[in-house]
Length: 272
Image (cartoon, rainbow, N blue to C red):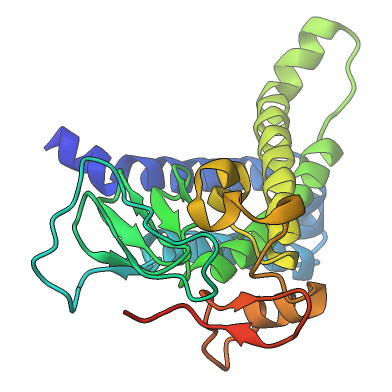
C-alpha cells in the first residue's frame, strides 16, 4: 500500500498542498500586511491573496492529474521491440518515419518519448516532473506554464508579506524567537520562488524556439536532431508563430511538422 501511495503521487501532492496552506496560515496569523489589512477591515487584498493561493492549488492538481498525451493504442500489430527505444528515423529524409518504442511496443510519433516512471509513451514529451508527479507533454505543457506563472505570483506576494511581518527586538535571541516561524517561511518561499522563476524562464525560452526540455538536453542522442547543421531546430517557425501555436487553445497543432529554413512550407511526418 505504501509503494502504491508513492507510485500514485499521493504523498507528493499531499505534502505540496499541506505546505502551501501551512505557510498561508502563518502569513495570516502573524503581524504581516495581510493581518494588518484584516484588522483595519480592508479585506480586498487578503481575499485576493487567498484566491490566488486557491487558484495555484487548483492548477497544481489539474496539471498533476491531467493526461499529458499518453499513447495508449497502436494501429500496427506484430512488430517486436528491443530493450531500448528504437530511433529508426532516416536523418536525411524529408519525411521521417514513425518509430516503435522498445518498451511498450507502440508506434511513436516524432517528438514522443517513453517515460520510465509513468510507463507510457508521451506525445511531445518535455520531461517527467517529480514536483507534480506527472509527465509534462503535449496536452498539459501550456497549463504547466500557466501554473508556474500563478505559482510565482503567489510566492512573490507571500515573500513580500513575510518580510512585512519581521519585527525588531532588543536582542538577537528574542528576535529569533519572535520571528522564527516567519524566517522559516521566508526560507521556504525564497527557495521555491527561485526554482519557479528559473523553471518559468527556461520553459518560456524553449517554447519560443519550439523545443522541448528532452530535445534540448538530449539533442546529440535524438536521431532527427543530431544530424541537423549548426544545431538547427527543424520545428522552429519563429518566436511569434511558436508562441501562438503553443498558447492558442482554439486549434490543433501538428507538433511533428518539420519546417525548412529556406521555405515556410511544413514537411509533415509520415503517418505510416
